[in-house]
Image 1 (cartoon, helix red, strand yellow):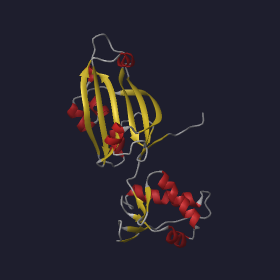
Image 2: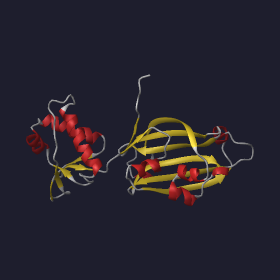
Image 3: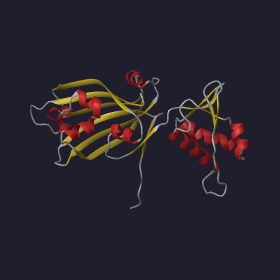
Image 4: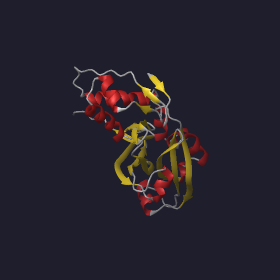
Length: 254
């Protein structure tokens, strides 16, 4: 790797290997090699790639092949093309396996620094929807929370959750540990969840909290989780920045 300083951030020349006898398309090999460099920190946010012509000449690839490989990562939100600057690295997106884990735990496992800002923390009477979803007994109250989850001080998700007041963590616990870890410390463990993944565009409220433009693409996830005694633990609706976040699913032939 060779790094040179120039306007618009350091330009980094990567040591890349392209296998021409591989069944993987050349453009995809290039995209994966650059992506690995971004995720490992070899290409930090703000650094610049050498231009397409230089990459093409150095690697013995056609310019359309190089352009296609770079576009793969532009589409993923990992690179951005800036006029007068070139191709620059932005913050690496978070990939999350669809599994019964919390975003806080996933960010920690990925080497990110998770932080939670609790916007709303309200205990009160449940709505008819909450009573039905949480299978509440008459007179039970609920905790409704609205949080913004950060990764390395960058806003990543807006999370709304509702849970029975009898298992409600404190505001301080939510900030320190996240929802699921706080519940585990109280002896409440989720063992099953139903999820629905979708999409929406950012309204003014979400755009402000996530640092996005109004109308930006957001991923959504509705989740309802259950404890091992069959009782409902919580239900929530989360919205994630599509430019910084994705879900991954492994499919097995049955």
